[in-house]
Length: 301
Image (tube, rainbow, N blue to C red; front, side, top):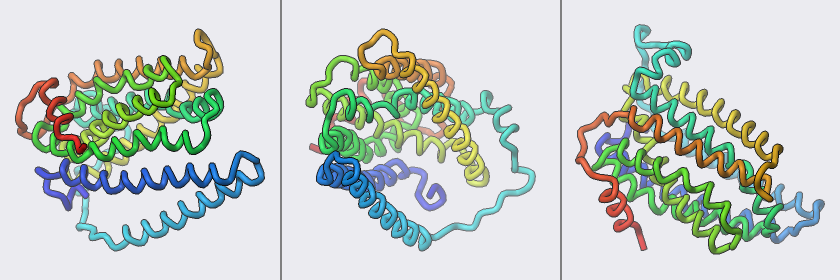
């Protein structure tokens, strides 16, 4: 898609695209919660609910694959002298803008997955919420994230990916920590609204940073190596979170320490790596408070 979209309008385009895909995600999430709730909590009947959900997901994936196969694909060839191995990429990562970006996202996603797998058992087991309530809580983040993405996207085009990425990165660490203070439903929905807003900015900025900091010929390889590092980071984060939950220290809930550690690691990743990243395009300078105000004031109401 980086070859098909004008570089000066990428943020706006991908923001609008994410809004559309987000609405479908939001509706499917609520539908899944309703289906599971309708089939009840009895094991035998509950399995039928999951079967219905998986069947619908399979049909949707097949339809998606059909439309993807009809998308125009520009010609692509990489000269032999521009090829590089994964080991070469790792050796140069700390000295290159894109490499530092990949290390940042890897550490950030590791930090996120220290807590991410455990929000579901916390809501369903510890708090005993129904599937429908669970779906509503998560749907709040989904709808806000994708409603905010077009606004974040326009900010990326105008003020640059690094500025938006750093703003969202500095606001993100508090998200898992907020889960420690209350289990009230309205409070948890409010956290999800905040989380969805911040993740909207972080994801759209990170996505566009890849296009800005890689050349067309090397982009596919760079993205592939990012996915390798990201996959390993997710695995390590989940294993670390599991070890923390099993240790069950300090808090009544075994999940709270994982939430706290996740927040601390997110903050550390941002503090360490954001100062090392550089904006590639020529963009309009803006301070963080003014940027945040512009984003908030342009949010749909």
